[in-house]
Length: 115
Image: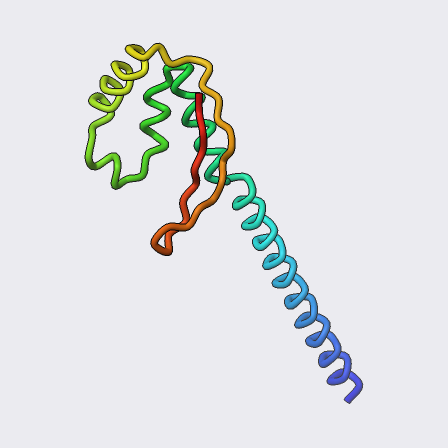
């Protein structure tokens, strides 16, 4: 009978350890999910995209497009088009400011001023 009690205690301890490990894993993933949202803010992506213009990194710009946008233009055409646009207007040292959120037709938008 004493062995059954010892086995029962070992099982309870094992179950408690498993629950603690599962909770720790959940907390880890929740923290990383929050960090990912903070690190991948739309305005940071926009700043990166605009910096690529100044550095003439049109291929990197293309890689930031959504799959849907990529289906509308090839990388070669995108690069050629953007190179023509930004070189003809002599775009350099682009600065973003006043990035704000707006809601229009129940959709959120980010607005900004650049020069």
